Image (tube, rainbow, N blue to C red; front, side, top):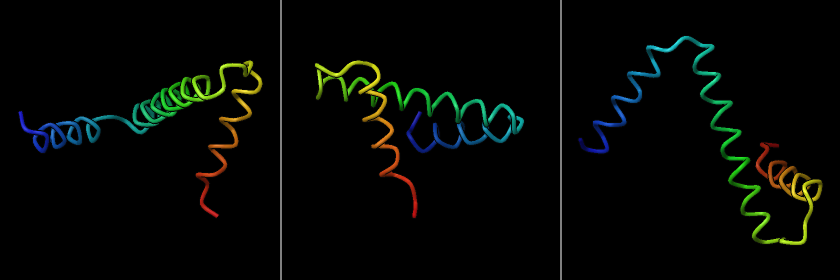
Length: 67
């Protein structure tokens, strides 16, 4: 399967989902992205505790907000 065909198939699956299912997918992807960002922060700041890691993550997320 080509990347374009895979994308079309994925889009078709999303269209078959209810709004609630699509929101759940989005929330799961957001949680995954945050977990991956936390892993990167821990690599950059091995001395940081969970509170500090979450603070740094919050700062990163604030930088992505549209003004």
